[in-house]
Amino acid sequence: MDFIFYLTLMFFIMIFSSYDNIIDYDFWARLTVGKSFFQTGTLFNFDFQSFGTTHQFIDHEWGSSLIFYLIQSNFNDIGIYIFKVLIIFLTLFFLIKVIKLKTSNVKLHFLFFFFCLQAISYNIFSTVRCQTLTFLFFSIFLYALEYSRIKNNHRVLFCLPLLSIIWQNCHGGFVMGLSLILIYALGIFLNEKDFNKSKPYLFTFLASLGVILINPYGIKYLFFIIDAFRLNRIFITEWQSAFFYEPFYLKLLKFKIAFAITFLIFIYSILKNIKINGIKNYYNKIDKVKYLLIIFTILISLKSLRCHVFFIYTLIAFCYVDFYNIFNKKLPEKIDNFKEIIIFFLISISMVSHLYKYKFINRVPPSVYPVSEVEFIKLNNLKGNVFVNFHLGSYVAYKLYPDNFVFMDGRYEEVYDVNLINDMAKIYITDEYKFYFSKYHFDMLIVEKSYPLFEMLKKDKDFSLVFEDDFFGLFLDNKLKKDKYIIPTNDLKYYNKEKFKTNINWIN
Image (tube, rainbow, N blue to C red; front, side, top):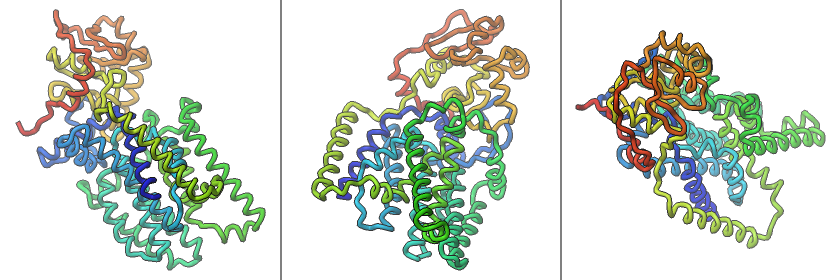
C-alpha cells in the first residue's frame, strides 16, 4: 500500500502547488542575480538597480539564484512548477524515511499527512523560494542523523558537512542544520550518559561549521550570519509571530489548531507518564533527542511564521506513530486498505479535474503587482527614479532596469542603509512625506491606494496622478509630464505571458 500512499501524496502536492501560483516578491531579485552571474561570471556585491542608500552586501542566497534562473530560462513556468512539486515531495519522502527507521512495518495513512500539510500550506505551497531548499535539507539532515543513531552507523555523517556547503550557499537557513546536529549530540549524551556516544556528532558539527568558509565571501559570510540574528525584521511578515503579533491573532487557524492539539497531547503525555512512573523513571525512559527536537521547534515556531514548517515536519517525522496509535481504531486490514484507496481516487479525480484547465502559469495579478503601472512607464519611455513599496522593488527593478532605478527592494536588511526602511514607512503613513521627498529624489511613485500617501499625493502640487487601476496609482513629477500618454492594456494574459521579459543584459 506504500505505492498508493506515495502516489496520493504526489497528486496532493501537485494540486496544492498549483493553487498558490503568484510569484514571490523576492523571486525577481533571484533571477537578476542568476542572469548577471551567468553573463558576467560575477556576484555583484552592490545593488546596481537602486538609487537608495546602499552598502556592499553578502548574498546568502546566490546559489538558489543560479538554480532558479537556470530552471526559469530553460523551462519557464512548467519548469518552476515541476521543481516545486519535486522538492516538496522529496522533503516529505525523507521525513517518511525517518518514520520507517524506528518502525519499518508502519502503515502510512494519508489523512495524517493531509492535516499536517494543510496546517502549513501557506508556507510550503507558495511559489518557489530559497527556503524551499532549506526545508529539503532539513529533512535530509533529520534522516541522516536518525539513521546514524538508530543503525549505529556514523559513516552517513560524513555527508553532512558536504551537504552543508551546498545548503549554506543556497540559503542562510543552513543554521538549522547546525542546530539539528547539536541537538542530536546533546540528546544522545543525555540518553546514553556517555560522552563518547556524542563525539561523532560533535565532530560533524565542527566540520559543518568549518566548511562555512567555503563560499564566495570567505570568513565575511560567517560574520554576516552572526549579524543576521541581530537584524530587526519587524516589517517582514514571515518573521512575525502568529501568536504574539496582533494582526495574526485570528489568522492561520489551521496551524494554531494543529499546534494546540500537539502541545496539549505533549503536555498531557508528560504529566501522565510522570504520575505513573515518577519523574526520575520518566526522565530515564524518554528519548531525549525527540523531546529536544519538539521543544526546539515549538519555541522557534512561536517566534516566527516561517519556522512553522520546522515544527510540523518534526511532528511528522517523530510523532506520526504516536498520533496514529492514539486515533487509530484498528480497522480490519482490508477495510483499512480500502479507505486509503478511496482517498487515492478522490485525490486523483480532484487532480485531473483541477489540472485539466490549468496551464501551469505563475501569475502576476494586478492586485499584487503594479503590472499596468510598470507597463505605462515602459510604453511612455519615462526614465528616472521610481519610488515603490520595498516588497515590490525587485519586480519593478527587474522590469524597468536600466532606464529606471528603485528606492529599495525586499532585501532591505542585507543591502540598504538601516534607516531606509524607516524613512519609507514614514513616507507611506505620515504627513511628513515632503521632508523625505527633499531628502531623496523621486521622479515617479507607484503607490497602493490603501495607503494614506495615495490621497495625500492626489492633492500635492508637485506630482500628478497620470495613471491608476483598481489597486495602484502612478504619480509623476510635474517636470516630467507629457501632453499625451500611451495607455497600457488591461489584458491579464499579456502580463502573465510577458512577466519574465527584462532588459537586464550584460552581453550587449
